[in-house]
Length: 388
Image (cartoon, rainbow, N blue to C red; front, side):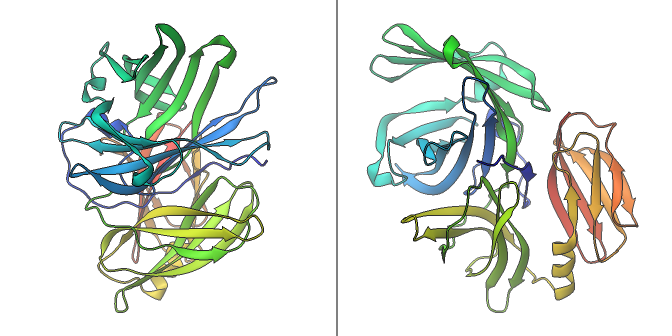
């Protein structure tokens, strides 16, 4: 099985700012948002990838809940990807995230177990060092979550919340592990520290994160009848909006170590602003299908042909990077690159007047940044990870 290429793709929408809460360190609540963590394994154990994705929304007791799927891809090649959790989460105005339902098998609310009393899944108090909470998740099973640090460093990210989870089943400790959460991204790392024969480390290798306000229903999926090889990531580009006919056309790209397939798909939409597009890959040879989601911002004005060409031609690589990025653009328009930290502060600006042009980022600290490129015909924004 081929190893995942590092890939970060983001499409942003403007939303209202609120006071920071601990939930800002969780994966932002929007259908299609996803993080991917990798455990490379060792000489005794096969490695794996774990994906965490918001698939859909459902209403539980009058609250909008987001269904989060956790899926495991083993490097051993022994088996198909395995779903290891399906949980429905909701966030309140205080910044507390509650689990209101879970399913053992299917991402369908009818198959879920609705909890009579929601479990506090991610507390606003996680911003408080040394805070601890003990909860009974089921008879005989107690979980203790403790804040080890609110300024931990992990995988190139700084100022992470570090949460230690201890599982106690029938008065016996069965598992101890630390999770690291970065502002605006979500979980960026895991370390299992007990039991000793299951010690392992996972680190973020890919993220797709966008805001999701206002909430808009998912556009029905297009179906493609094809079989793909092994892959772990997918993204969209070449976005073209036709506001006269209310359609949006995108190119889906599925890739692992090389691009394996591209599909040009057109969707009809009802609302401008935040939407979620999806594609279902139907593989007749394997008698299986799977649906993939991406949030997309549909602007109030359509793209011209020239703008579309510029959008498709701009490339920023590598991302993540250690100290240098290259800007490529075949249209050769002068542009201004601005880089902001996650608090909104401008940390670097550069005029781009030749392509490709290299930008030195050696003076910036490890972490997550926002990049904006402005030219005569285009404003393009995406996230940047500096990781050394």
